[in-house]
Length: 321
Ligand SMILES: Nc1nc2c(ncn2[C@@H]2O[C@H](COP(=O)(O)OP(=O)(O)OP(=O)(O)O)[C@@H](O)[C@H]2O)c(=O)[nH]1
Ligand SMILES: [Mg+2]
Image 1 (cartoon, rainbow, N blue to C red):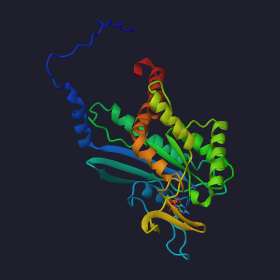
Image 2: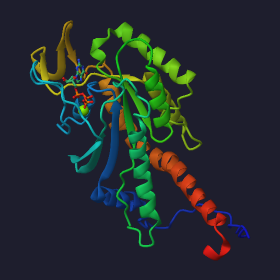
Image 3: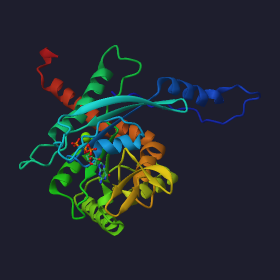
Image 4: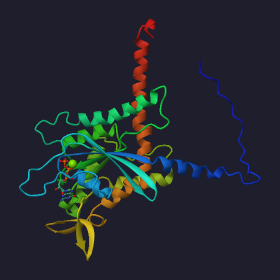
């Protein structure tokens, strides 16, 4: 039987006669959050050798993952061969960010790529499943360690042509379980014109294949956020260059790469969109990526699991229940 709705009395906003002090609740929350720190979990997906490890190290300005590039020309190319998570705490002005980075083996190079995305999807779902299990235990922890993936950076090969069919399939599958952010890898191999044409083509293909990408507008999204999201959609896919070494430009050492045409400054927005990606991930959408994971992706998983559980119970003979 549904509970009868309780009518609440009309609310009148009044001003306290003297200072009570509950406005400090924001500082109290901040203090608690700072003490606990923040958790951000990111997964990198894409073909072997596209610079996944290098880009993560460039974004967080720290050597977090080993790049598998060759150090000498006669060395064989080393590859990431299994799903690996590395965890680091980085601190900035008293704010601690625990960063879980999940590296996936490059794929799509085999003759038969059928199902090569399965382990990645399974990994993401396993984290949802682990969280749900912890939530459902009778004596649940006050604070559940969160390993749910908040963002998936999907690396696209800078061919300048269309997306590979496998990219379409994998991005579509991933976007059903995680916030997918596509990036054009090694954008220094394209001219600005080629890059812009490639970006427009990819955007068209996303629409054509109904791939629904992050950021999502919901009824809670205010006008300012709608505009911010729109400006992000206009940039996606971010055309990026990563580098862990410095080059000298105008006498200053900057993160960059030397190539046939000259020097690329990773942090110069006229050279590539690395700065836009970093701002998006750290300065504008970090909290929203975390929230969207809980409210959209995890919620969808959770309700599906709980419904399946309930149906299972209902199908069992009454004596078994
Ligand atoms: N030109 C160019 N080279 C890059 C860029 N980023 C990385 N590289 C180089 O590409 C090679 C592979 O980089 P990694 O970061 O190991 O690539 P990965 O995608 O992690 O490779 P796997 O782990 O094997 O899948 C290295 O030699 C890097 O120096 C880039 O933006 N432009
Ligand atoms: Mg790697």
